[in-house]
Length: 501
Ligand SMILES: [Zn+2]
Figure (cartoon, rainbow, N blue to C red):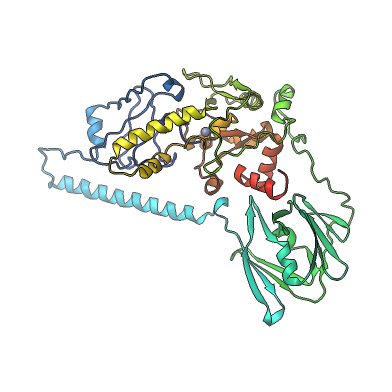
């Protein structure tokens, strides 16, 4: 979680809607020059002072809540960055040199604004995965000129688009039989295609055919199949036309006789429905991690999939079992961080390999956090803002606190299955630029970890990109999510739709 990960999460400016990208590091080494950051300084109500917290979360326990002191800067710097500093007296502001400087600064300002504008334009052209729109699928009932389109959106899950096979059968007058997640669609010409929710193969005229992705049962009696597979399903009778540019799909009847294209008839053989992709090791570790295999790829394969987010709360009384101290807690005076034993051991393995790869400075800054701790933190923020904004309603105050602090019971850190780690002074997206991050991104699944809040899933997770937050799910599921391009929210839904949980 972004919240409380580091010092900066403890107290933010009242206008703290900023993302970590714009947040300034809160702690600087003593003696380091404070850069003037006029442009980056967020607005704050006049007369409002802002306090910076410099203590670590662990250090706050049991200490009195003394208001932290605002670091003092040399007077000269204070003047330079103060938004309401007075003009320097004793200088004629209208001499020629000053006017020249004024115009030069104006030109520079216009250039900067122009640059920002153009960079915003160019980045907006790229469409990240999370902004991928669903297709508008027109299911045409009838044929030729008389056909009437019934339009429904495709279903997007991870990187896969699905369309509704039951709807195709309906508009084409195919027979449908079966139930309980297994449906057989007959063409009326003794041909059939059979799909099972949660299986990545279909049976077409007796042949087992791979679809590349599992069929889904979104409602009882409605089977959804991958669009890519659907495009090649029929050899005659049904035409499926995809326009990727316009994001439209047309499904129409184009002949009386419906026939399926039987792919894979040349010796595909029986399809292995559920290969243990956790066991399938197609990589090698630099170090001998055989003693850790039982943790990275746990026998309790599905035991680490708990989903905690803003809508899936965790009970206040939930305390994970076998909390284990992490060897790799940052050595800066904070209390030893803990995770559930299996995750802690898998993390240990990851650190061994990370170091073998030459990255020695990454350490864990935060892992398990109790409900009570989160609750007391949230309440103290609430009290502070309640006093700070006397004109606001309780609801407004609460919503304001929620912009920078997780509500108790919505933090994944309470599961003991995740940790924040990086090699910066505080959690910052700048970590994504570090070589150590690139190694983690590429390799963490091998140890059973996922990047919980990826850059391209912000709309789904509800959290901005957190390159420092790693969640243990076990290798089998970490690999499955990686291969399907899914974040945990999508994956849990996928498991549900394919009858796997
Ligand atoms: Zn976190």
